[in-house]
Image (tube, rainbow, N blue to C red; front, side, top):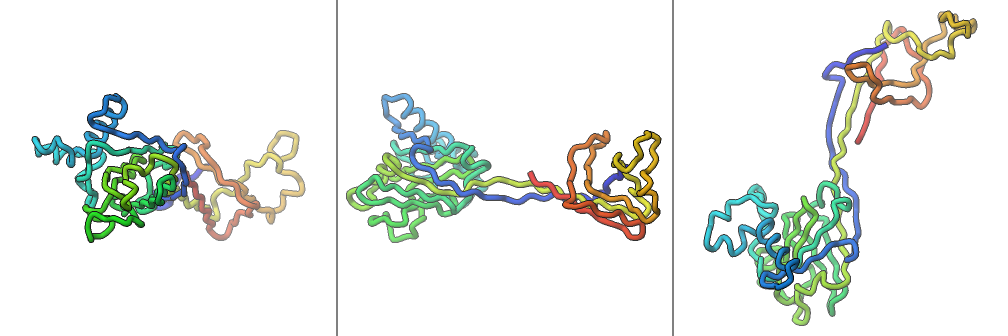
Length: 276
């Protein structure tokens, strides 16, 4: 007893779900980079950041402005509002495992708190990829905290990475370069896309009125109904709705909370929904 779906009986849509995470320095991979370092790892992460994240703001563009047009992780060209001008010879870059953010970090949800310095440093994102301090004593200008003058680093939502590139002072005794060098925590929301499939299963009065439940038949093997089930008033009950592929192979089924008598007088509809 199969029945095919038509297009208007199938609906597919997606929505973004978000999960909150709180990590500390033991869960985040941090690398301090230095362009002139003799340490190969430190120098290599400087090159990684320069090429992949800050190419349009690096020294490459001084001699060759064409590099400003190269699409990178940090500068996808369709983005607006991200500042990439504060890329100096030193800084720090931190990575969060993809298992801790799934498809990306939700914009506007990132917060970093560093209590290991003389004064607590609080840094958040501005939904555009810029990081700025909410409690700095010193600022670079009277502009907005997340302006091109006052931003202190960047966050790259798609790859779960953030940088601290500002070298100036946070409050006169603590520099931004001290952030993430000791104990700190980060909170944010990870993003995951949920795809929902919905099927509308129609059953007209003259359709699907037979049963495949073998318990209704006599044990003689001749397909005869049990004596107490031969009344014309005894309906077929629907307890499950199965979904089959084009080869009639069962790919999934929905179980009703209780069996529903199949009507032979009015059309019936069953809605099946699956998220994954």
